[in-house]
Image (cartoon, rainbow, N blue to C red; front, side, top):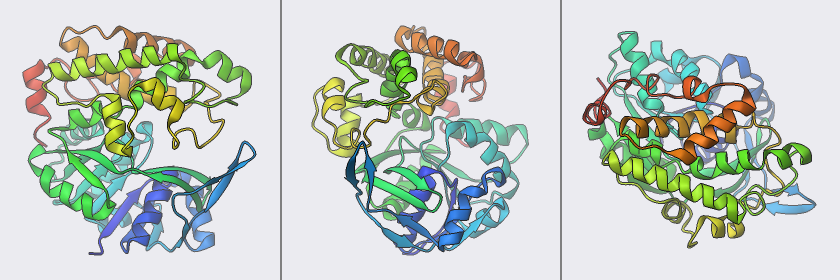
Length: 376
């Protein structure tokens, strides 16, 4: 059944998801923040979005998972236009852009809307706090995924390269009682396996980017800056020793989650669910993943890259914070965040997505678990 869908954000994921949804027969309006309106100009000039059949990297051709050209229903930098169009809204922006994007959306929310954040990274808790502070009580269902379905890169505005599409994603809702309704809708729209979660904490904890990205980026930064990122992030950056640190971070994530009564998968179990991989260790994943090594020499060349500046403050910081509430000292997580903070001359424990920004500062375990179940 054709749906009216608004996609918020015209970056990598926004391009790819708009292409896939429009090709699936849905009426898609793609919104971009007015400050980044140029992201829409290439689409407007082409009359739609092109998914290219391949790209050249490191002197070799990399084939796409899918290709083609589609028109989208509309392009806009006006949030009211986007939200008036749709009952289902997909927000696909970097974590640092989630709060500014939602601030634009707040005056135009409608009862009954579903706002899906891909990936969530605990954003629904931030949005709940913002609504409470402004006295807005619209009956909106927030949904968070642990990842975005396509593995993709923008070639240029209006052109996107989609190298793979995940077999499944995990989803949680707030209020949590709406999970089965939302999971059914997303299964129809996204056309993949939907794995329902108990609450939005589980969705945030299950974004395993926090396991691999920050540690590899931080521990290889000297070489990354010297070579300007000209080496493979996974099969070269995730050496046997670096993978030990990543495994320790995964162990800490699972320990904190268990103490919060969350049912979490290990990093390896998540990759099996998402990609149907059959690897036995993080290091084996790094060496052999055909998808993650397909982009060639793609290591970040600066600590300002999202693998550090997004995954540290918006994933490691909140998980580490929940650990402190529970009396769990996540030393590997804390060490990576502290080094990243030095690199970027910012205290991520203060400036990142700390528990105060999630609206749960001062709560104990029982209070947190009760708070995340309901919208208000």
